[in-house]
Image 1 (cartoon, rainbow, N blue to C red):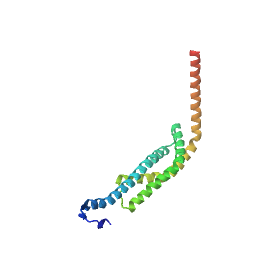
Image 2 (tube, rainbow, N blue to C red):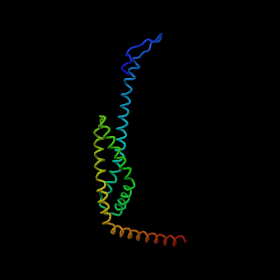
Image 3 (cartoon, helix red, strand yellow):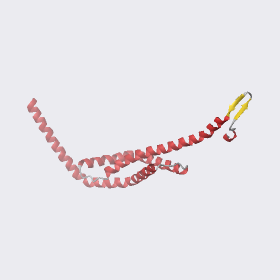
Image 4 (cartoon, one colour):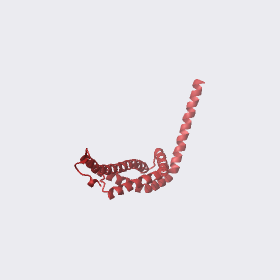
Length: 174
């Protein structure tokens, strides 16, 4: 249809219509729309990949540690709960990234090298997460008794400090 528009000017009665500019704009418009769609697809994929990579990277880093200290133990317990809570969100983001990546391949949309590497990183983190969860849960179970003793001991020490402070306060101010 755009091809039917003449590239010059047309006279319509006493009015001279410059169709060259119109034809140029009509020819350019589909290219701009396609470019905008390509940009939005890659932008969305970049954002989803960045977010999921950060979340999975942090959780993997925490779960990859040996729970030898009370802080690490508690952090891992909370991280396992967090993963259970966010699992559907992780799955949805991962599916979105894969769907957009497939769309890029089908539509010949070029994905930057950095984005392709980030997507590969996310795939590795996502695929290794269940094994990491299982390993971490097993290690936590093995160290549970030790950590409970440490917590009870810390609680006892804290109770003694509070009582000593209370006694000193009562003696000094009352």
